[in-house]
Length: 174
Ligand code: ZN
Image 1 (cartoon, rainbow, N blue to C red):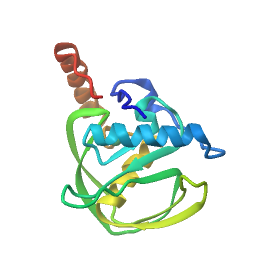
Image 2: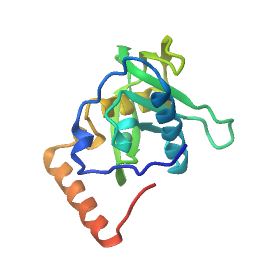
Image 3: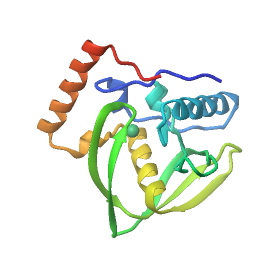
Image 4: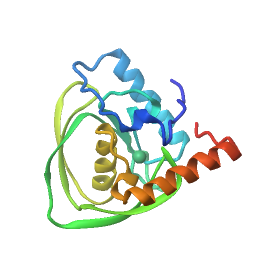
């Protein structure tokens, strides 16, 4: 297991669509372990494989609070099957977009079909933070970021600011 470097905007990989997994093998299991380790190490609540530069439809999530027991969840080839008309708003951050928080409205509920680490097809009904986090991470698999919810002008300002900060501070999240 190892902590992987997380790629950040404007890395072009973040705009790419990730490929489905055909079979859950040792490579995928190893990748999931690395994703969990990287996510916990960065204090994130979700991480998609593309964020460590691997274009596979795999993501990990843990929305448990500090007081609760860890609740690692892994989703392979996740597909949103149903969404609610009712919306909810969270201020979302992203490990690939340092120091940026954006209020985003998403469907409050979603049903997701996915494959688990044992290769079994599963179905989950999500609400609250899990629903938002899962939608955020599935967006990553389709090359969509939280800044894509903004106008192009606002997006460019954020990316410019991050690129400049990077030069100054040589910031790396690992
Ligand atoms: Zn993200």
